[in-house]
Image 1 (cartoon, rainbow, N blue to C red):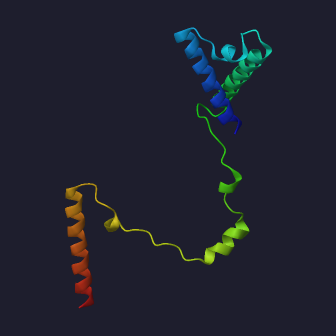
Image 2 (cartoon, rainbow, N blue to C red; image 1 turned 120 degrees about the vertical axis):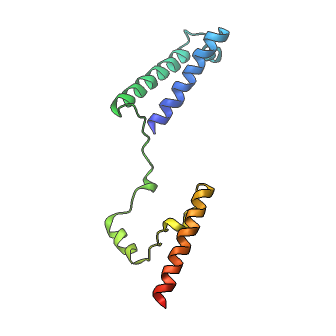
Image 3 (spheres, helix red, strand yellow; image 1 turned 180 degrees about the vertical axis):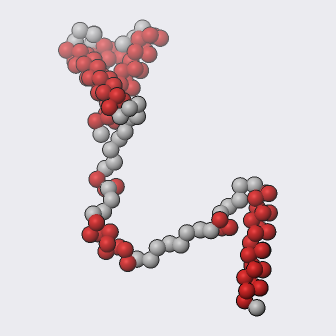
Length: 125
């Protein structure tokens, strides 16, 4: 969660630098009067700490920023999984039931289905 906040804060800081570079206008200083104001300095410090946090996170996770999932999405404990194991499972789809990617594959799937149907009829007779 802290990574999300750090990312948003650094994004704001980068937009502030964009406005300084393009328009010579400091958004933070504009909000709080001037750059030397204590509130402006606090915002600059927060942006800097957020950038350091993101740098640490990227190094720690080897180039990937990861966000931990909330507790709601965690798997159930083992005893609850055993209670739900009595429920029937959904059958998996055959290759024949998948949607074809092109017309040639569609024709091939139709021919294969016809061959399987004729083989089944021959076995039944």
